[in-house]
Length: 192
View 1 (cartoon, one colour):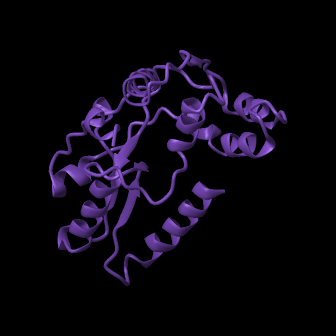
View 2: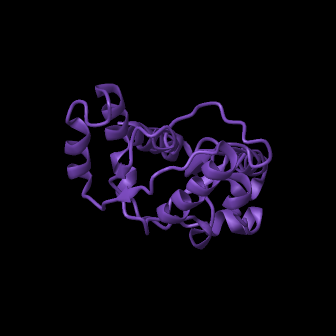
View 3: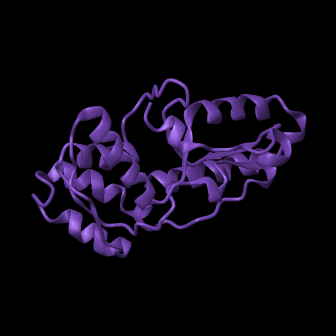
């Protein structure tokens, strides 16, 4: 429903391109500020991580090799400001994402989080078990009441199910052309 509403809104904006100087910005999963870690909401990417860090889940319905498309909020904000006031951006679509090759895999990210928790929190987390499943299988798994402690948790994870199988490479060509190349170093900002 969330992505459908984004698509429907984008269709309306596309229709207005002849009347207004508009551009469309498509950020990936937005995470905290790369310098401070500040973030307004602790959802999407953070929710399953929090469950893992607190020992509530160990089995993750995702392949360890899946790349997770995260981008810091400060990059997204600066990009939107710069492109909004750039006449050459008018009428174009921009994926505000990190280069695909720079994105962490789920395995790399979980290994990093485990090591961070051990060093910073003095918590020795069990190694997560990653099982690649179809989106429909993930949804069925999460619908089983109590599998993750309570129905609220299961419902929240079920809403994230489409992201557990997403293997997209989003085009940065328009962004690179007007903003320059973006070098993501997730190991630097993730601990914040």
